[in-house]
Length: 70
Image (cartoon, rainbow, N blue to C red):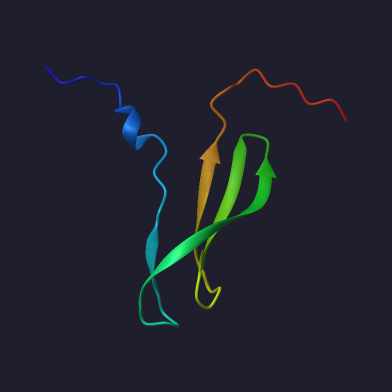
């Protein structure tokens, strides 16, 4: 029997190295917060050597009952 639930170890997948076209090899990356969205956050992956943008990641908010008071 196959469980429909995802293993917890894969819920928060983060890249530690990505291919950088400027450096022409896989490089360590750092994550930078770009936007705070109503349903989560948008992060950008940057090459640690040359700071080239290598991609983005959206982290979804798990709670649905969020109240925002301006």
